[in-house]
Image 1 (cartoon, rainbow, N blue to C red):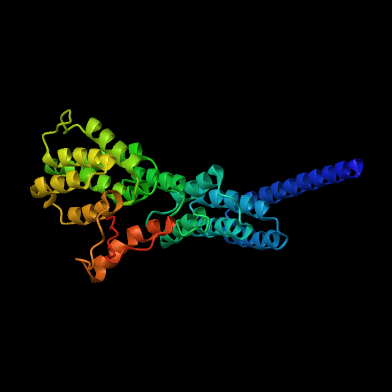
Image 2 (spheres, rainbow, N blue to C red; image 1 turned 180 degrees about the horizontal axis):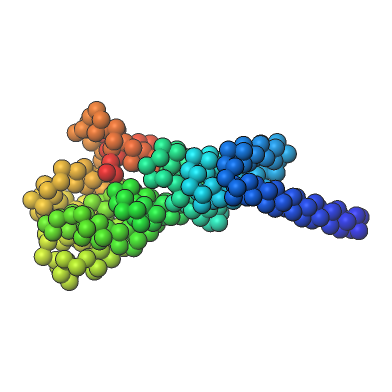
Length: 327
């Protein structure tokens, strides 16, 4: 029986080698077709081979062929064909129920970085990629993929979208460095404290104390317009510093006094008190409000941030619907 098992294993290895060799031969022919400029014919052949491989449950071969084809089309400026094959990469991942792995996430991020930033296909791709990376758990996407997307968007100077993805990653340091560039290139000198205050409060609303602390420390150390601290010249920065200490302590009286003392600074952005209401619930045992202070569109925007993250822990959404908008 051992000999039979060994022979079966060797046969499987030979078949795998033949399959891979077959894929490489097909890739060579398709590459030659693209190099000659026969883009439409090559694209249709890629699609035909994809569905053939998938019908034979050759999911890995299908995925590898579509990924290499997407990169080839991108290199020839064929955005539509490349985007289509990129979506087929995702389809192969979804149907094969492949486990999330760094290499796969990096491949998806690579494809994303090559897509036209203004194309609707890119929006559809990133939404579907994040959904797959979450493993169908209802979470907001894998932190590593969020980080890779944030880095690409940062290079494109799309700071708002980059910030969103950094918030859902575990990369507080990267987020801080991006915010320093964002503030110095696009912000007013009077707003240097507001860039990091928003990020810290949003990280805390997502129950990410570690990244909240890292983003604050890194930003305040590296921003050229912020003098060494703490304490800081800017009252809002002192508030954030004290808030992070208070979150570690968990004492409601400290939190309450802190918010009262710094109301002049907190009134600079009407969202600050909304964030702090949520932080009070998460870290200091403050009961949810019975009625929301916001309704309609803004209420829906607030729900868009916190709704999914609460369900991660099996918690019900609070009755005040006080999730936080990210923009």
